[in-house]
Length: 473
Image (cartoon, rainbow, N blue to C red; front, side, top):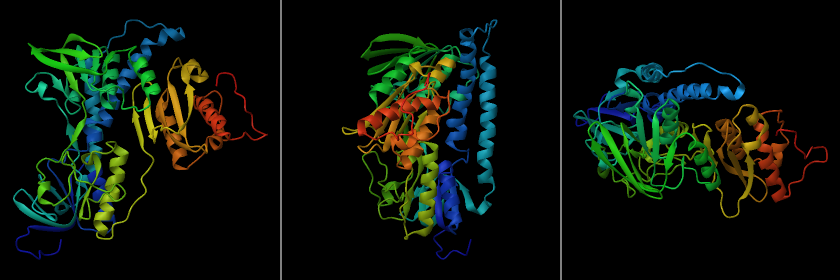
């Protein structure tokens, strides 16, 4: 870096990025690609949330659970196995071993940066363009805040033993005998089903009235019914917890009531922006009621300032691909400041990896939305695989253009991508029906929903197109 211009400043840079997670790494890359001198700051450089305590270790646990569950279903196909045992210690050892490999991969990009381009420590703003780290004063032309989020833990669990979050649950040596899961959102349900399929006695509690953050009541009800075949779910309840020796007593009341003892509690009650200690009050930024800076999601700029924000700390869309996109937008604009340019954001897409997977795509259904539904209880390929359950509801405008969907059906993550791409390309239901559908596949299950949209919007079938259905579609 060039010589310092101000003797009161220890380090100068064009763009400082606070946080080395998915969003922060994307922001640093983007700013550097735009020609900026960057400085990446993090308190521990431990790897991304996804690799270390999020997406990847949870999917490793889900993969083990899927294998155990499939063995249990083998008799449906005339395949009878002997006694099957689950080695909980081996399950968790594999989760950690492969998790550590994913973390190591994530750290490679950080380790590849020059030493002068990274600084270990916690940043506290002194003003809108300067902050302190480890007693040093840093001045940056622009700043990207990408500090991520942390688990929200109700005070009732303070001081209790065996309270787990996504940041600690993968460190347990053995599978717990019993587990209360507080939170029926995506993370809570994924881990609840995984532990249940691995032989853990699981019960889920939530104050809300839906599962997996689904906004379509029909699909949410379908998913809840399917999941309750494997473990109990109590919605619209308040809970109280008390330590009883090495176990925890949970009592609940509301839509249902009861009391049960658990060896462990997994708190999956959401995540909070990790903004404490940043000294945002010194920046002059306008903050919302929760202390999060107000920002423009097309530019990721906070007000008209030289400060940008990206990733889970902005409390908007806490998923990896959005964090990556936001980081790239924020880094590019930080490097170009004050020449800030809006970017097109992709169609909203959120997936929960339960079985069946659930997903929300695009805009939720409104008062004037056209809806087509596919029921997978009688879908041909799903029956072949003994996975015939679930719903897909596709939304369209009055001209039949797809606007979104809610899914809880086998292969749901693949359906979600297909529909998201169709929404992004402004395709109509008829344009999708004109695409090839191989038989017998899960994808054929979309045809009934798409046909219903066509019927309601009077989109005509071509004379040379088959308006009927093949057996098992």
